[in-house]
Image (cartoon, rainbow, N blue to C red):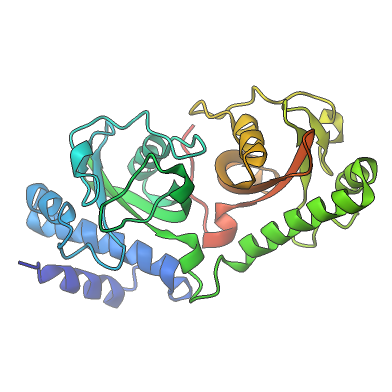
Length: 308
């Protein structure tokens, strides 16, 4: 039986203006959807909510969208496509590039909730195969507390949030910048490309503050417009508060054919506060690679604190 109160909860959220008008669209709808799920849990109780969230034919599971639930110790409580993992402690689980999504999601939810981003497969008729790394794609998620000791989350493919236009413009521009840099390096050579990338007034620093950087595969920084003092330094051992070695992950991704990596990085425009960053990398040749990135706040328009 579908729970009629899901629709009522969603209508109440919209009527009360809990979500700003400018956030309408897929990203705003994701937040509304999670708020409705939390309201459902409050109205019907934890057990009923977990049972509903865990059903593939439930009121919250449709069109590829679903709610998952964890306790504050990262034990999976409900997931309509990961039934076999319910009851397991997933604190050590990472996405295909090493981002500790569950621990981070738990911390963000307990700190008040907000948007996150990560890599994960879409659900299919057979469920979700977390071992199929080639199926992982960039997702926008939202997490929040659902009650004492537990939290909920959901996500949508970032390529789907712009009404059929693909990734949001800021991400499309980032990918284009990386592709331009790789093409320039191939045409002009390594020396000219690294010099151009390191020029703070050059073609690879955009008007909105985005830029390219370049490394050798061993983690040695070889070009950067804003960190000239670190060029020549090996940063392969750099890791975030969760232990993710982000330079190593970026280098491995570039060597494997390129693509997206989500990691935590200080935002110099915001007092070097830690933020989730979406990176895109490409190989130049067998010696070095380049990349760029955008902060999640540039996509959502709001900052999600990452607990230290």
